[in-house]
Length: 78
Ligand code: SF4
Image (tube, rainbow, N blue to C red; front, side, top):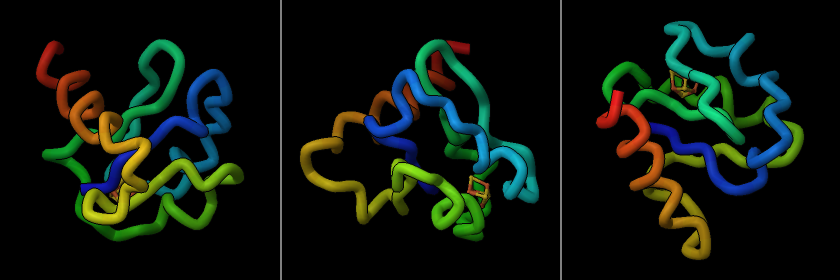
């Protein structure tokens, strides 16, 4: 799955939403989240993010590793 990290916080550009073929990017409070069970790993959202907030799960920069868990937790609570 792809993960959205810190640069999205309080920005919520939402360019990614337009690109996602399965509509699995959701708004939640201060940032956007990608549903880990719905994402088909197409990568379409990554290059359109103006602040490079989106990464494949294995490529999330170390300082933002917590966002991978936060992303999964966001949907676990719904
Ligand atoms: Fe949607 Fe593809 Fe991005 Fe996953 S990688 S969130 S399916 S656009």
